[in-house]
Amino acid sequence: MNPDKSRFALPARDRILATAHELFYRDGIRATGIDRVIAEAGVTKVTFYRHFPSKNALILAYLEYRHRLWMDWLDEALKRHPCRAQDAAEQLIGVFREWFESEHYRGCAFLNAVVELGGGFPEVAEIACRHKHEVTEVIARLLPECPEREERALAIAVVLDGAILRAQMEKAASPALAALQTSLRALVPAS
Amino acid sequence: MNPDKSRFALPARDRILATAHELFYRDGIRATGIDRVIAEAGVTKVTFYRHFPSKNALILAYLEYRHRLWMDWLDEALKRHPCRAQDAAEQLIGVFREWFESEHYRGCAFLNAVVELGGGFPEVAEIACRHKHEVTEVIARLLPECPEREERALAIAVVLDGAILRAQMEKAASPALAALQTSLRALVPAS
DNA sequence: CTGGATGTGGACAGACCTGTCTACATTCAC
DNA sequence: GTGAATGTAGACAGGTCTGTCCACATCCAG
Image (cartoon, rainbow over all chains, first blue to last red; front, side):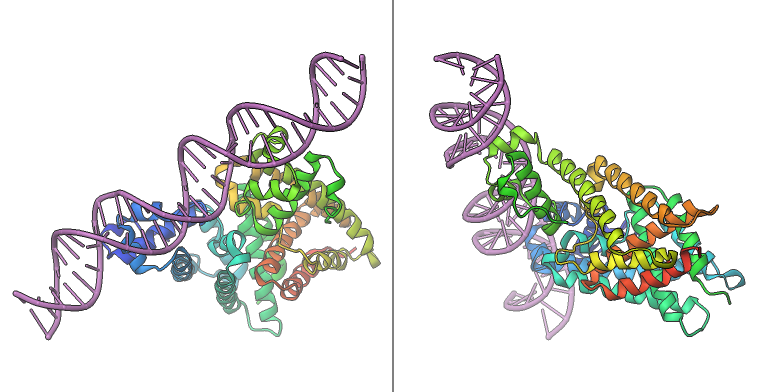
């Protein structure tokens, strides 16, 4: 998920965005001052402000960038964990295990942004809601067609959020994955 | 849950703590400078630092205070929503509806603190984990005795975390409660 | 060549932040 | 009365933060 390693070959705007993505996700949005983004992106302040009129504009761009990146990662991860015997629960567990155990895991960037900034920056919650809506649609497509497909997909998405937060809080994947397994087995309809 | 209204009758330390509780929960820990806590608690800086050697010490005290307050609230809320026909799922939904619809709802103070501060302040995650552990024990006691009681309680606690964050993100209780209902009905063993 | 787009190296302003410190006042137990 | 505990009113230091701005340099299409 981190395509940022070769960012020095990129134009300035992309370098800023890739750097912001890395720092905001790793350390937190509020904990990252723009001077640090600027220094690590290797640009100057004028360049920074030419591309992003304010820190808030950068934050919104970061979240849109993260959304694309994460949804692409999800697509690829679902392919790496193929659905055997139509078992969407096991597929999701495989996918989320991969994420929770990844080196730079620090929870969901959208939920984190809502917690850090939600109150005074309504666009953040809007982007987060759109992200979660799209994830829920991906989940629904994994489920067999049935009258309560949407309802189940939403419940699963909420369960996933809980597990994401647990893995973040505990800095360990196993308890969250165990809870996730219990819930998904109860929630994913047999096909 | 907010016993802070008559805080001006309290000794200085309690006033600081009650004020910090209100501001940290409402606006965020990082978004609240100590000068604001001091001004709203009606103390001076010397008094503040006499009672709390640093902002971090205040944060830890805030979380311990919040834990006691929230666990007391949970006990009382469970009594207000009695368990009819041994239906723990409906009881929990009633309790959490009450919380999600409350005036000052802004999610779980512990999860929020972990997101805001977790990386550079490990004690925060420890307190959050202890809090979640105790909540899980309360949940387990609501369930009928069975071999997978602990496992179910953990899964339910994780589902609750997801719903808590959803209600916060969406600033609406209904979708989170609907998802919670779907999950709890699947997870709470029949008794 | 020319001008627009893009980028550089910072300095600067004003606001906010955490924590240190002085001098003084009040209360209460001994 | 005395001293410890507790509280007051700030001023101050140094750091961090976001955003504004100057002067200059490079690249590229027309």
